[in-house]
Length: 209
Image (spheres, rainbow, N blue to C red):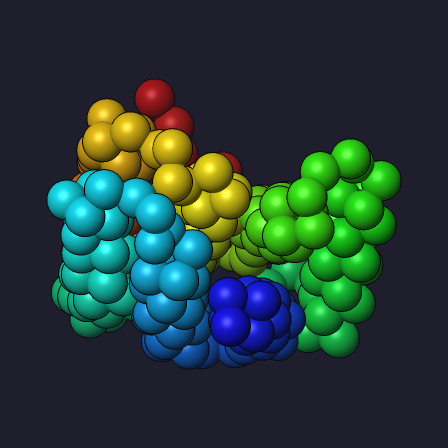
C-alpha cells in the first residue's frame, strides 16, 4: 500500500510541472501532505507510539493544513496574481520532470539496498530535484517557497525509509525547519509585496542600495 501512495506522490510531481495557477500548487502540496501521512502511518508501524503520533500530527496538521492555508493567506494579502508564470513552457517542464524521475530511479537502482529502500530513495531524490527545478524555473517568489516545500517533502520521504529508528530530536528538527523557513520566507514575501505590486523575481534586479 505504501508503494501505491508513493506512485500517487510521483503523479503530483508531474502535475505540478504543468500547473498554471498558484492555488493549484498549494492544493498539490496539500495532497502531498495527506499522502505522506498515509505513508508514514504504514511505514512507521514499529516506531514508538509517541514518536509515531508526533510524525503523523506534524504531517497532517502542518504539511496538509497549516502551511497551505498560510500560503493562501500570503497570496490574498499581497494580491499576488494567481498565475505561476514559469520561465519555460509546460510541456518542457513536464519533459524535464519526467527525465528527473526516470534518472532518479535509474540511479537508485544502481545502489545496493533493500527493494523498499530503493523506492523511497528514488522518490526522495526525484522530489528534491523537482523542487529545485520549480525554484529555478518559476518567476514568482511565492513559487520559490512552494518549491522549497517540495524539497522538504523529499527529505521527509527519505527519512521514512529509516523512520523506525528516527529519534524524537530528528522529528523536532524537521518540524522546526519547516516552520521557521516558511515563517521567514512568508515575511520576506510580505515585505516584497509592500514594495512591488507583483512578487516577481525579475523585479529584484531593480533593487538598489
